[in-house]
Image 1 (tube, rainbow, N blue to C red):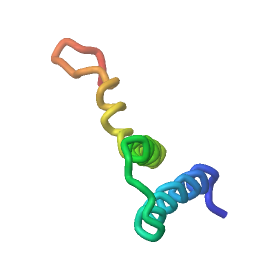
Image 2 (cartoon, helix red, strand yellow):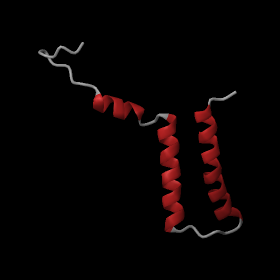
Image 3 (spheres, rainbow, N blue to C red):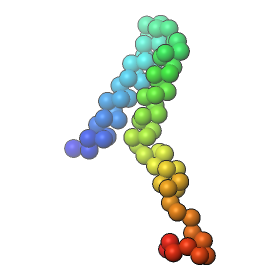
Length: 71
């Protein structure tokens, strides 16, 4: 059984699939609100997958210096 986070990510992919198929198959107009929504959904999927995790943990990690007690 997949973890709940994986299931949630697959459910959000449903929105992207519906958008792409709507534009391709039934000629739905591709406007600014649809593109902005796509960007939000894609960003949420990337954050949920941990793509940006290394960037945020690196930013919070203290710097090592010769005088720093951090090991």
